[in-house]
Length: 555
Image 1: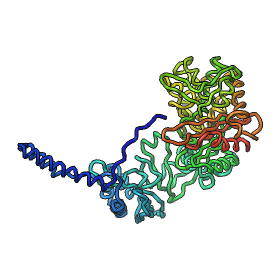
Image 2 (image 1 turned 90 degrees about the horizontal axis):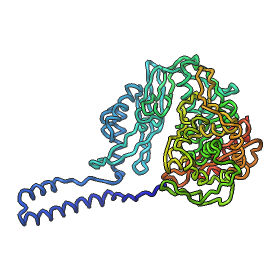
Image 3 (image 1 turned 30 degrees about the horizontal axis):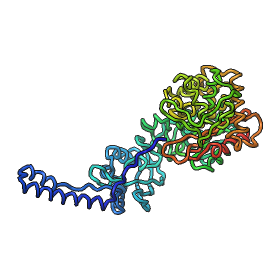
């Protein structure tokens, strides 16, 4: 993490204004002296400019300004005066169309907006309205919030515009539309045939949206009439699905069977609920079936679509590469120095630890960074990228799991960034789905693309890896991972898991966070799982118990 320069705080509103007044007075005094000694016409022009100058307010808006702007914005919105409401924001060109569409496209009427108690410049408010479309109508109620900011150019207080002000499920560029749905609803089933609902499994809200978008038109259902979020270009690029907010008339749902285990899904929901920002995925290594997916936050599916540095869990992929190249074996003597210099960077181990005399397996188990980074001079820039793509199927953007997913990224890098990639930092990005697949590939010896809906349902072709690791390499990987689970950084979490198991912990530093993201990936028999707790600390202490609990359950 680099050092940041401290930025001087802006003055409070009152001192800033006084400062402006003093500047005018000083300017006037300067003019007087200049004119006395023959400044002439040029001096007169400066005097006029100085007199016309108005100080620009800076600093946070006052409580009175926040109330005034909020009232102006909400009143104009309530009255259907979209242009006036948009003018109260700092981006009228973006606000205008969405506020106009609130009545024109979303068919919302009888709107009531009630401001709550402000916290500084942030004001929560409640919305009540009626969705009315071709003789159908239903009430709609939700909560949102706005923030008042000061425009830099003139200091004018305005609403900081984002589409989420209109509705919290909107991203910038999205729209609200009421009408006949282009995509029929679906009834998603777990692997036992029971219905999956967001009410029962809150983490599945985004998953169900994705299933409907993918299979709604082919699952045999009939569309209804609904109010929905229609995603814009930016949201579609981020692989976000359209979202139904309210059904005016129910369509006839088609049926989609998933691979989710009701037992593991329920347990996964419970486990991530113990942490503020946790995500987990459970897979079956022999097939790639996704058995559970859960997130603490329900607005974004970090487990499938997150893009985070995986920290030391990436050392599984790095070790695969090192074993295949014959650069090391688990029991080979391989010290881990306290520091290692590469391309001008000095790399440190956690807590400045070191292993002076030990094996590579011990360094893997202790997650000692420099035992991996010191191989960098023997590697080409593309080696790790090729290993991730060819053996683990990562970073090719070709997984088709049944809903939108991010398939990992291991870019070709050089110098110190290449060294950082070896320990899951640098430009490497993953999510729990990717890292659960890594553990599953080690357990089975072959990459099986994860999937939530069987490829036979729509005849899609799953992604395949270009090659399979050798049985020797697999045995070496299982050796170091089982050692880590029994004696290394994963031992505490994996205690009592039993069976043929292995694990790897990870801690990924994130600029601006006091604590790192904690990662944990492991397998037990024909189960593999991975989890992350953002800003939680070391993976063995945070994500580890979540993953271990699910592995103990089996399926």
